[in-house]
Length: 293
Ligand SMILES: [Zn+2]
Image 1 (tube, rainbow, N blue to C red):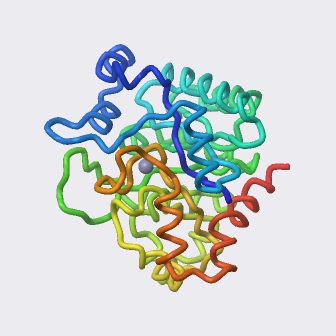
Image 2 (image 1 turned 60 degrees about the horizontal axis):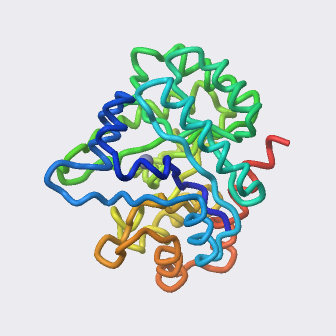
């Protein structure tokens, strides 16, 4: 089984979150991982702890995703860290690069490829300012399309009660990118924020044909029936399992983040057939990555 959406941060960060964020000028990230007057859902894991969590959950491989940093320097630093983790467990950890598309995207992509990365993301078109830098983002997307590199985008759910740091991500941005780059493989995180519903519009279905959806953080947002319900709208070929580890996605049950609680919930309660389970946990992501070689 493969987890296509996990994150890694420098292990020492957890003791000095505010200082690290201030030094690197990453205020949005700080608000997410250390929200004012609220308990954080973010947990931290060393690479050893991550592999242990994978073993316990029977996950053989995971994809480390970068982060939507507000600065190129942070992206470069984060990629160095992910490279160390990949080198530590080369058959088990793969990674998508942190990219700051607004400055020299090609140089960042070429460097990331030389370091062994296999895709881009997680990107955030609002936090990373897509509209003002569209030309650069399109340069990045063109390179990714030509090289069969998927791009993973964060998508905020289209509707929710207001919570701190709820930053809407307008759906039209993703539709624009999918339309301009029809062969680009796009992964929309968090069930695409509800975009699968709109695939029922025949005029959009074709434009979204190379769009995939991951399940990251699903238990925080939706009940388990979402698996069957989304499959009924778009089938099971475009859904990728992702946990968002080390995020605590069952905060009432988990003292620390793990991968197995979510997987057991899916196995027991999502009502997936064996074929659907295999596609979501293994075949779909393997198909995406196999296009590169
Ligand atoms: Zn996300």
